[in-house]
Picture 1: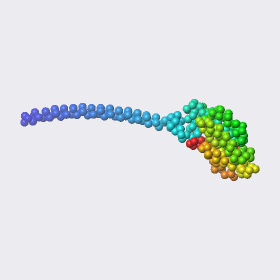
Picture 2: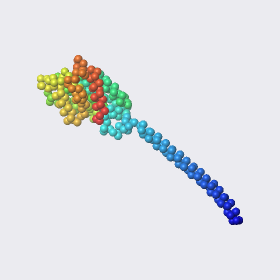
Picture 3: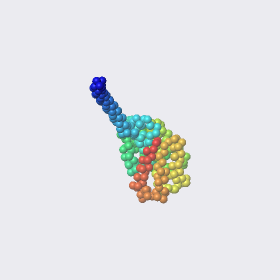
Length: 275
């Protein structure tokens, strides 16, 4: 009986001690878990911020991006790349292009909006000049002196047809002009097809050649020199049959508002393609 009296208090003391130490241990465990949660949360905050920065960072329009992808840029990207790299970029129109036409003005606005730096437009156009005139009048000299970053060369298929020169002559004079332009190694040279003109469709000269015959020879010259051709004529024709071409022109065979939109839309899409 005495033993039981002694043992019971001892058991009570042991129980109390166990409870106290158990509570202290649980408190320490909770503190440790709280600290781990804080660290975990902080780590995730950092990750979230990094992820956010990555998600919102532009994948284009940066000099680094353009340098890494310089071999696969579109015309818009190339112009922007040059503007970021040099602070400005220049594009020259050359050959059989009328810079006063509305499509040229609208296209220039679109290009300007796509360029980060200063955009300079150079007008070296010779509307209605044929291949012989472009060569014999040394029209490439002032263009080369300006040294633009990009040249868009309007191929004079219709003027060559009107002048009534042979296809061999077209090829010869065009080669002379291109050889001069290609001396500018850092310049991107693009050859532009003319848009179709209703009154010229199937109209032949004394050699039984229409303007598309000359355009075909010019395309062959470009292919031999591995030059980029902007297929405005073929794209425009694909979107409208010959019977409906008149819908894009006014009574003077000039582009109307719808025709202007068509040209700008086609070139805008071509300028987005890899050079």
